[in-house]
Length: 408
Image (cartoon, rainbow, N blue to C red; front, side):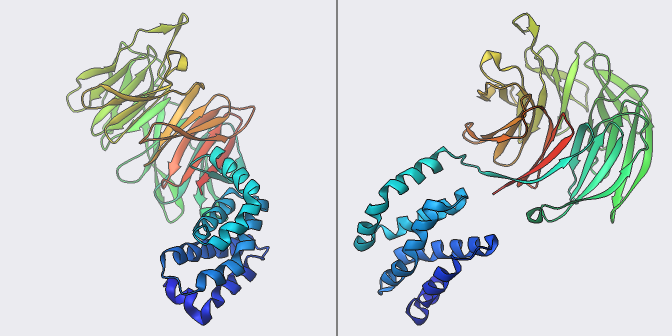
C-alpha cells in the first residue's frame, strides 16, 4: 500500500501532505502528520527509487517546524520518528546538523514525559461523591449522599457524558455498589438496605429491596450472597432468601474483594483474610498486629486480579502497595510509592493509585515501575476510581468532582 501511494505521480502524495500539514484544524492536521510519518518510515525500508529525495524536499522542513513549535508531545514524537527515518540520507543528515540543538532539547522533553500519557476527557462538578461504577452497557452509576444518579457514557472522544436519571429511593447516603452476574446493579446504603436495579434501554428501575438490619459501608456480590461491612467487627453475609451470618468476627474489616468464590478482607490491623464462601474456612494472607509510630496500619484498599492480591497500606514500611499470590500467599512484588494511598484500580497493563493529596500515580503491572502521575486537584483527596474498557479512568474526589481520563 505504501509503495503504491508514494509511487503515484512520482511522489505527488508528499506535496499533498505538505499542504495538509499547514492546516489549523487539529484533527485533520493530526491525521496528516500520522500519515506523513508512516510513509516516511516506509520509504526507509522500501527500495529507493528516488522518492526519498522527493519526500525530503516536501516534508523535511515541516517536520523540523513541528519539532520546534508543536504544543502537543505526540506531535513532537511523530516528527522525531519521521526525522529518524531521514537520517539514512546523507543530504538530510547534513541539513539536520543545523537543528541539532532543538532535536536534543525535544528528546529531553520527551524523555521526561510519562511513558503512558493521559488526556483528561471531561470534568464534572457533582455532589459529595462516595462511589461510582461504569457498567458494561456504558452507564456510569454515581452514588452520592442524596441518591443514585445514572449517567450515560457517550463517545469518549467527543467528551460526552449525558445525564440519564436521578433516583432517590434510598433514604440515606448510598455508600457502595456491585454488579450482579445477571448484569443488574446492587446498591448499599446506611439506611440498612440493599436495592437491586435493572437497566434496560435507558430505563432504571428498582426491582428488589433487601433489609440488611445493619448499615452497609462496603459491598461485594456473588450470584447468591451479598457480602458487606457494617459498623462493628466482621463481615456480614446475606443470602437473597434473608438468611445471614457474620464471618471474621474478631477483625475490623475496611475493604472487600471477591475472586473465584473467595472473599478477601483488608483489616484494620494490617492483616488480609481469605474466606472460602463455600466452606466458611478462613486463612491469613498477610499477618497483622503491626503498628507503626504507635498507630495501627490498616489496609485501606484491596483488589484481587488474575490470581494476585493487591493491598494498600501505609508507606512507612517502604511499600505502599504489596502484591501477594492468592494461591500460596507469598509476596511477589510491591510498589514503593511514598504517597499516602487510599484507593486503587487495575487495568490489563496499569495500576492506578489514588492519594490523599489529589494525585493519581500510574504504575506498570509488568515492570512494577511508575510510568506517570495525574494531577487531579490540589485541595482534595481521591476517594474512588474505576477503569472503563481499559482505556478510560474515572476518578472521584472528596470535593465532589468527577473526571474521566483517556489513554492517548
